[in-house]
Image 1 (spheres, one colour):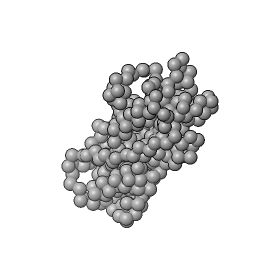
Image 2 (image 1 turned 90 degrees about the horizontal axis):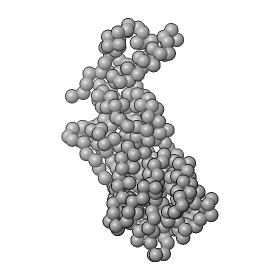
Image 3 (image 1 turned 135 degrees about the vertical axis):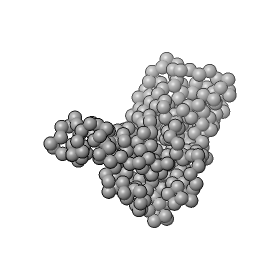
Image 4 (image 1 turned 120 degrees about the vertical axis):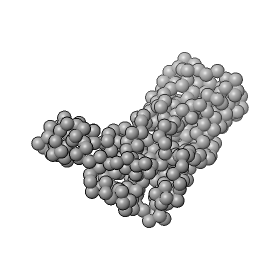
Length: 342
């Protein structure tokens, strides 16, 4: 059952202040102190409050817009996913409101609040690196806005999810390294709470175990999922007295940064060190040497997420237990991992 949307009076009663103070604080009125404004707005957000007019429209579900929230747009994977979402939305007669979190949890929360204020019919989202809970998405669900997560998902949030075969893709990639003769394989991994980090790291570890290879903790570095972090991580690996002979980065930005640092150090790929990324960003095919990677098929992932969302919006999909849909990835071998067998 959808929870009742709280009113101004409800907020005022629970906070022990007047309705007029709550109203002014929500509108950033200059007569209200910054401390009170922040406290009221945070409480309203926690309770899932939306203005009366917006709440009425949400109940009528008369909006023809969906919200799409991604960590960033410059990463080709997310822009491709948006293209897939928009294509399906256009066919359904809907427009798309796009927001990005810039990898910031607070900004992600504010974007979800904006979606509710703009009366979106549903939301498709991939969470930021810093997101650890789904309360802001639960507030959307509580006011009748369906949510579908893709790629970076929150496992505990009971919504439909669309992901790729992260574990199998990572295991396949590391097996390729081993079959190419590499033995000291490093991992540039991401924030440990992210599902993509967990699954891709699990694939890396299981591939090593399958071949009876020991895990060296010094070769596993936790990084932010950026090019700059990839450079720093690679620099740290190259400072190790015993160098790795290959590096698996769990996304392409990390791999691009590592690639730059390897070349800066005067090392050759794949002869001195092998390298693989994950995403198949367009730049990976024109780097020198071109980067081995995994295509996540962002466009298809976006289309799948959109079809699921519109099935929920239209009522075609029955309200059953949420499912996780897995889209197969494609492994792309390029020059950075094609060393002759040892």
